Image (cartoon, rainbow, N blue to C red; front, side):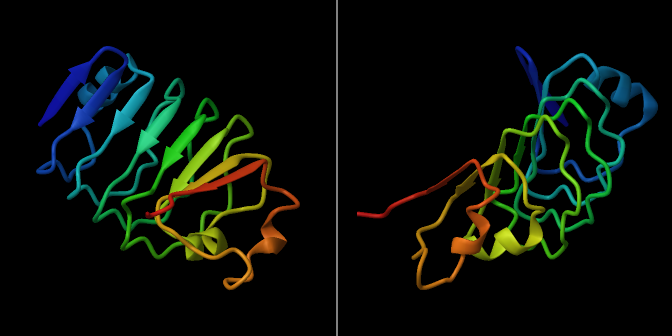
Length: 142
């Protein structure tokens, strides 16, 4: 079901449920939470104190609330994600996404975006995002 490593709780690929109140109390002890590839539930249960959330392959739920303490959000493997995120906490520092088209799903803000796949900035006409993005990184294939 889950593994505990230092400040992180990692749910395995079979986990796909909204945690019980007992499990939510357990989650409160950690700063990082990572969900396996089959998790596809609304994440409004994530408590304050969590600084990093990693969602994975099959996650495709609207994101309405995130902890104010959140600094990192990883959607880099969420290839099925179809929703726009209208709000990110003020403390957010890094958002990881799978490809450039995800930029349309994110609110503008002063945070770093890491894009997992290669893309051409000019060809894909995303220069208009740069006025509010603190940094933008993308993975190059050689």
